Every structure is written in C-alpha cells, then in structure tokens.
Image 1 (spheres, rainbow, N blue to C red):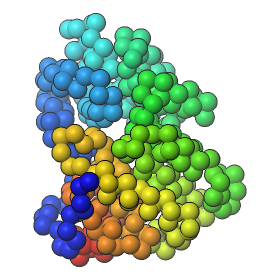
Image 2: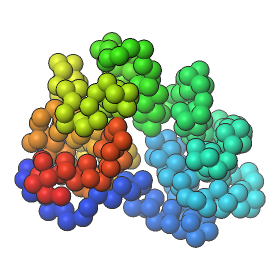
Image 3: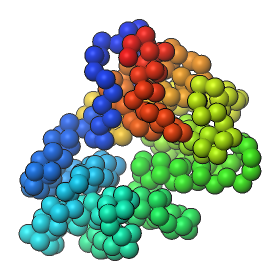
Length: 318
C-alpha cells in the first residue's frame, strides 16, 4: 500500500498541463520528434513497448494526434511495408483525422482493419475502430469493436472508458435511472477485473459520464457544484470503493498503469463534488500538473478554470 501524500498546500508551482501523454515523458519526447519527421524514434519506442497493450494503445493514440503524424507514418510504412507498428500508427493517425473531419471514416476503418490483419493479437487497431465508432458509428459498431478489443485484452483500460461514455449517452427519460445500463456495465467490469486493476474506478467514470449527458440535456445543473448527482447513496458507495482501491493499490513509479492519471482526475472530481475536500486534496496532490480535460470540462466548462478552482477549494492553491 502506498499512503496518500500529506494534505495541505501543494508544493507544485505548475499550472495544469493537459498533456495527452500524461506523465509518460518518453512518449512526449518521441511525439515531438515525430512532429519533426523522426519516425525512427517512434519505431524504437513501440518496439520497447512490446505487448503491454494498455501502454501500447496509450502511446499510439497520443502519437497519432499530431497534425503531421499520418504523413510521417505513411513515410515509415513506405520504408517498412511489413511493419505492424507503422500500420497501426497510420491507422490511428487516420482515425484522429477522421474524428476531426479531415479524412473519411471509411478510410480510417479500412486502415485499422489492415493493421489488425498484420497483428492479430494487437487490440490497438480495434481500439482505433472503437474511437471512430464513438464519434461516427452505430451502437452495434461500438459493441462489436469493444468486443474485439476485449477478446485480445479483457481489461483494456481505454476501451472500457470509451464504452462507458457510449453507454452513458443512452437517454430514455427525463431523469437519471439508478439502474441505467452504464452503471451495470461499469460495476460488471470492475467486479470481473483483477484486484489491482484500475477498472475499479470505472463506476466513478460512469457516474461522471452520466452527469455530462444529463447536464447537456438540461436535466442537471450545468455547474456540477450545484448538482446532487454525487450525493446519492449509490454514488457515495461507488466513490468510497474507488477511493479505498486507490489507497490500497496506488503506485507512482515505472510499474504504474500508463493511464492512471485519468482515473485520478475522475476520482478527484467526484470527491470534490461529493463534498469530501480532504480526500480530493490527496488525489489532486498525486495528480500534480497532469490534469485531463475530462471530467473537468463536463458538461461544457473551461477545464483549466475548473481544475484550478478545484485546487483552490481542496488545497488552497491554484
């Protein structure tokens, strides 16, 4: 067990970074090199990553987000046409372009399927299809893509977060249903995962995603501080279980999950709006500058202002 950091004023003087690489400094360096055309650095990074599927997916998605990533990935593929890493990077970069309206979903999907054919064990091309389906696809396409990811890595972190976001968007009434399918999905995923899996925090993520949907529909206040969404009995149970998991399993070293800062942002956001500032303070201290847009932007807020306000409320520091 790693104890929480001491409460009180944080010594961190930096503002929120909103860095997609989170605390993977090697990834951030390679992404910057790729933007300058040095695709060999990405090649070496992905080779070192191997079949750590969560880390591989995180790194490929971040590398793919650069405006020139598709062009450099295509150059890499021309040099090494049999490289599954080059194919996966090109596929993910084309997904990113399609999501932003700069390429077609059909082209992105075709490249993902081609990359999947080159590396049948790799869930990352199917993660790309799921990212695409979340923005442009049908419910059936999302479920099929998620099933393909899970068949290759049953506890895939990013895929479970995406599926929670997709399911949360199903809205059949004018209120929140405590039996909503996203809550069942998140509870199921947390229960079936290993004890040390960060999927233990997925029920908190599901709760935030439902708030996003309800607030955008006008069924919850646009200011989460005015919402009772985090004060229900079910919400308190979910957040206590997730916080207890963090106290027992949190680590901050080279063995840590590559997307753990995402979970900590969701949990800190929930604890703050539950009215537990001391617990939020411990989490915000661990987060440091590694803020994430979600959930601080929910439903349509400036995430930088929201994160700084959270730090002031919990730590007395921006």
